[in-house]
Image (cartoon, rainbow, N blue to C red; front, side):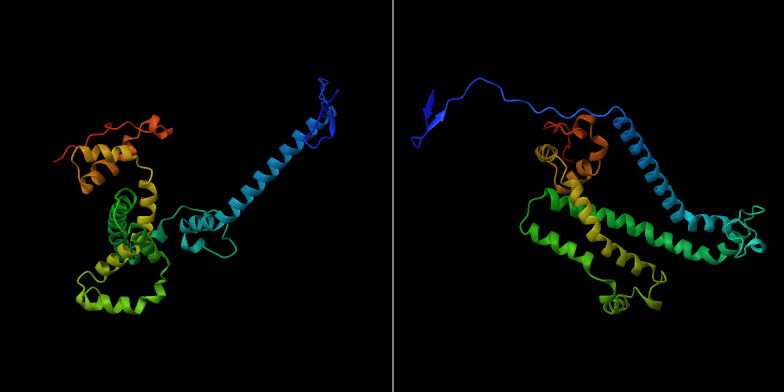
Length: 253
């Protein structure tokens, strides 16, 4: 029996005979065992190489710690890797009076600058992620542009500006800490804005809608909903299910 095709050419009719199924060649008895052994040896070699790299990169840290606790008379070039013969803190007692003032200045600069920059960057990221306003797609790239401005390009105008504002030189009562803190805050805003903006993008819109229905403004929503949001996330939310509207209350004050 034949069936005519569309071009008038007779084609053989399909029959119910199944096509032969290709069977894979049988695996030799010892091939699987040899494959597992080879994979095991590769894993051992891989981890051995990683541990060697770890030891190589941590070698300066080891020398630093061993030398720090050695007696000054025991510090030699030939015995740089040897353990201290006696535990001594003489190096720390000799160096601390020289570094104490610089260490306090570092803390006075880094802690406020980091906190303020993170707070302002979090507010910027929240507004850019959840508040719809005109030219938001222009403002965000302009803020990120600050990441790519090299420090060397603004050193001279920055020094002149700080001098004119009284934040540099003898006019600064803090010895330059106020000006340096301000500079670090401003230069930290682009990266903190980027980090917090990407973080607040994952904030469910239902929480924003609930806060808006409760009468909360942008600032109150940021402080009462966005900032404590990670602590309020339940396991069901972290697993991917969206929260229902009204799961958080942000009453107007």
